[in-house]
Image (tube, rainbow, N blue to C red; front, side, top):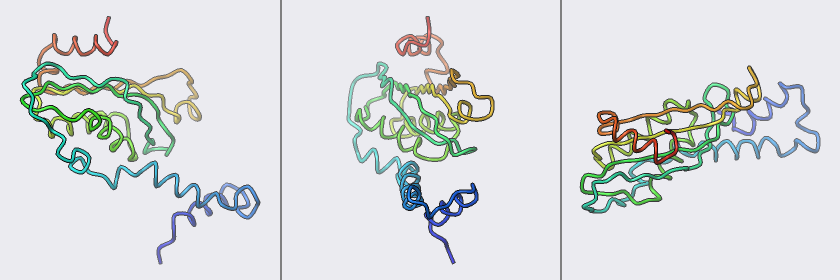
Length: 186
């Protein structure tokens, strides 16, 4: 017998010493289950569905950057949110990706239980696979509630991760141009 997600939330409430029958908690198991399903809807998506053919011929071979893409994810270790922004760049080789698709790819991977290091890599690898770019760069900066609300309780800590592929890894000049354009280098 498989129990429903709301049932599990009800059991968690009971385990915390709460009364799931009290007025304020009556619908909480259903709401929490619905929220968790939304926060993790990236599992029901694929890169192919998101891109949906939005790859367009272009002679541009200069860097394309989408900066400050807000992201919301859940830490796979504590199921607590981490919130931040991603900066994504690629160097086209004959095709460019529809602008909104980059943000949608970030969202798809962020809406899964994650650690930031893997999230950064998954986004870079997906952009590389879709575009066959000469290089891809992804930088994510985020605040983690698992560090802010529990444990060491460091309110001003920010985690930064980066993945550089192709030209961004091989060329210090290309990497520095990207970092300057997103304001990460002086």
